[in-house]
Image (tube, helix red, strand yellow):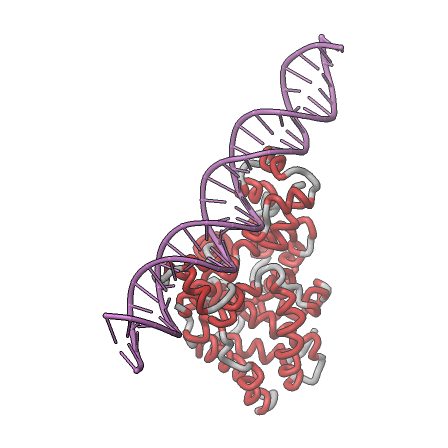
Length: 178
Length: 178
DNA sequence: GACGTTTTTCATCATGTGTTGAATTGTGCG
DNA sequence: CGCACAATTCAACACATGATGAAAAACGTC
């Protein structure tokens, strides 16, 4: 039942999933889901239960210093996103964050308060321009590999991705800026 | 009236815009919009009228050969997206394509039949892996700079973006692959 | 078997939406 | 003016959705 909600949220986004559809997918009555989890927002947060703390996961990456940080960062990133259990939750969050008002949450919340400071520890030189560059490449990876699942990107083995875009992240982190 | 529709589609996506909201924003009756443009889908296509032919715009870029193609590609890309008239239309398309079923349209339509062949002219060596890499970086740019308008990325002058991301695209197009 | 609790279903309300057709107003023309 | 025609508004239908509360079924315990 929660898994049905997760799948629908991940595939259709928040507004795209109806309580009735979730109930049907779990072959129960729509009122039942409302009995266990209250409102639709409650169901959303109940189904998502963010399973990872980005700061904790990223800690070893920054602790090892700037050398090879691009590949390490990418490897841990992919290890999290390639886990199906986690992926469906993160996809639901991303799908719902890409819509209208959700952008603010990402723009004013996630990026500046969690990923910003973490990466800022890693890059001392002009982080205000390097961090967005890293973010742009990672967001592109998320969208192409997971959200729309572009064929060549979605099937590419994680290690190939690391080998091919890792150097780019490294360049954004420590390379020459024009 | 069409501009109101465009703005709403660009900001809230297709499902997020209601005909009533568009009508209110244009201070007319909801039935009026339905009188001029028929159904909601008709309004969508009427408001969007894709103003650029990607193949025509990209033609000079590929004609000049692979040298410096990354920067040229990025420059023309930004010149199109930074035009407000065009941006609002493209944003509407992107916002509506990022949702559920729309992904297929991008996955099975746009990428393989228009941007794929064009870039394939530019890169002869393993295009099936280089094109997705280029796509991932460009998509990341679109999302961070235009969809969520991440502060440092959205305000960055176009030439700075070209100078910083151009080399990466060039690397994806012609550089060493791991 | 009887009772109390939990689980599940039924019917229903309130709201927002796309859509439609009739009615009303405005406008130009002879 | 009067009249055809377009522009615009009104009222309403049909439908989907989130939410609610009462009724019914299932279940365990004594």
